[in-house]
Length: 258
Image 1 (cartoon, rainbow, N blue to C red):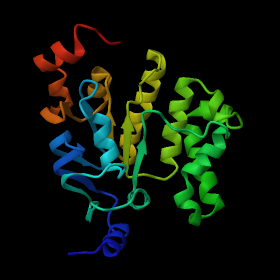
Image 2 (spheres, rainbow, N blue to C red):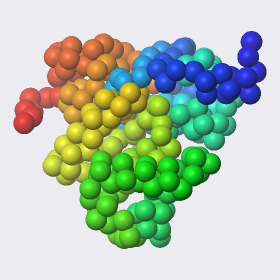
Image 3 (cartoon, rainbow, N blue to C red):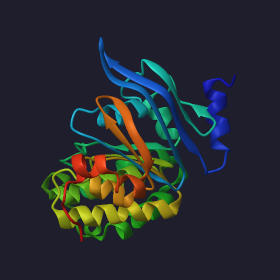
Image 4 (cartoon, rainbow, N blue to C red):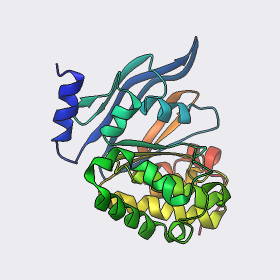
């Protein structure tokens, strides 16, 4: 069996095409079960969404995958690497990045300083590389270019979400995990954010999307899981789930979309 150092070096030389494999994964808070026997797969260039009600364990899943919580049972592998026991920094080195629900920006720093801090793990590649990445983020989110010298704490909700995603992308993730990206956003801004998320699929990034807006999540993702009371109760291609009677009745209702 490969030790952790060997896994890191092997993964670093491997193909960009990787798969996240979650097997029989469980998380507890003391004696309370938060997640139970979760099985989930996501490949490079794929968007997978996890939908479900408040308190179902969606954010817990992302936090545990990022190493913020310890699992009680099960395994998580990313490519050739088994991530059990890996620290957060090691998971970032493996290409994992999380945009948390609360965005957690440095509000007293400028937009550009927030972005630069997101790229700290790539500083060894040099100043020219950092500038190149900044320009790619500004092309993705032109509004951030306009506000690059503005303090992050003065941005609107939509701009903060753009900045949070941009900061995560500065580390050049191969697996991007997004926790409720539409939370608190106006419909127009939500549409803009999801358009960017969809475009990232073409870059080969694997995207794990946690989202309470089930309709938006199913419209943008390739595959979806329904998480209820800490367990996956339904899963399948998003195009099928969006027409599933249970999903329609409980999570979509009769609302129409443009």
